[in-house]
Length: 266
View 1: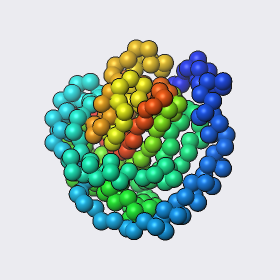
View 2: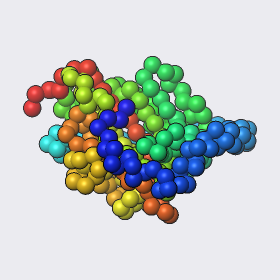
View 3: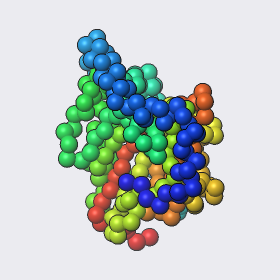
View 4: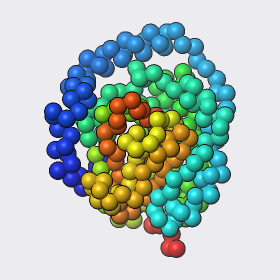
């Protein structure tokens, strides 16, 4: 959950601003019915596919470890193997496979959600094996070890959730900190994998900021093609992004890694 949200920033998102997104949220039930009908047609016509290339995380992860340990965040270019990334982009799901937003505070479409303890097989994952492979890779013991080595934290880290999102003009994430940041003795890191996007300012790149109105910015990703932003959820900064400008879009997948152990002493 999101905490430490600026009330002044929230007021900027109210009507009459961003009327298109407000209307989509208000009509959410109708949108979901329409998408359900579209999914039925797509599922009936779409054969199950086999994975052309495994979800391979490159050595760029390890190369960014020192920056993460010093600053509490890192931006990684070329995070996926090029062959897997090309297949992921070519077969990215239609909007019908995503759920429309419930609130403007996190106003993107989302889908293929997995949390620890739920079945490993994603709904419609057999039709989108690249996203299923992402979940499987993130949930693997090998990836848990790589993330533990990357962060330098004590053992016990594991992936407890994955998600895919689709962002478009007007969608945004209000600047906030995560609830887990307030839990003592709990180590966690968010990995934001930018699959594809227009790029540039106000394109959905997750901004890290020292304040909850994005005025004192630390970093804003501008390249949203096969890159990754990872941050320590307990670090002293906020994250969010302004409403995306017209003509722009962002496809993203995320993975959250957490553990109950204390972070290792430097």
